[in-house]
Length: 266
Image 1: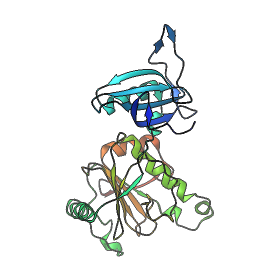
Image 2 (image 1 turned 45 degrees about the horizontal axis):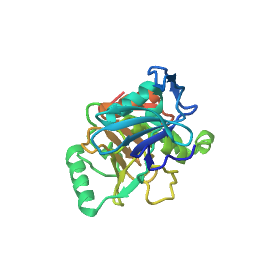
Image 3 (image 1 turned 30 degrees about the horizontal axis):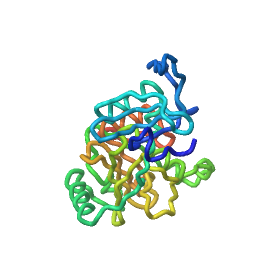
Image 4 (image 1 turned 90 degrees about the vertical axis):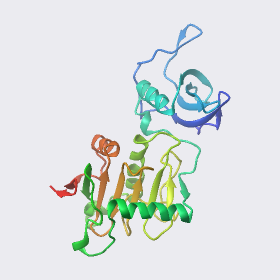
């Protein structure tokens, strides 16, 4: 399917997803229109007319609406969509850019808070690692295997691993919410995991998930969950229960070898 238009059913599109092999229609919600039971939708959109209510539209392949349910919040619409089409929480997209540069004042404020809250100590010396005070409710993964020069490492597609890893964040927030993406001593961004992007390590407007040369950090607005990528220790610390739940459920290829829990060696 083509991307959804910005207006569907006369309402502004907040998020959309084709329904395809990635999804399982559950049959949990019977949709009847003009007395006829409707089959699975070709696509879903979450839309609003006034920002006060949110409509989950089931759409034809041309994004014409055929069913709808009304919800008070985007979260409720997202939950309803997952109830009807298992897997759609992973595939929502929207029309907003994936990366938006932070202005200097916001970037400085976020870094100041990160230094204070996590006791960040950048250093190439092993005696100073892991570089932050890893919080309770964290798991740290060794990713050195992708840098070890082995035949297995040479077959890895680092860009694909970055995309797969960054898309984990879609399951922690809802469309419209964004994360901080921090690159130490470089421009930093608001990251929208629902934005359309093809990752390239050579695109300076993207912050990688894999710390292949610098500290890369992703944070929820309130710092309640995120990741800390350490380039010299070659680890990624995942913290906060919403993100940990996703990582443990999805078991991504990159995050397999656990070295610490709650900052303690295992």
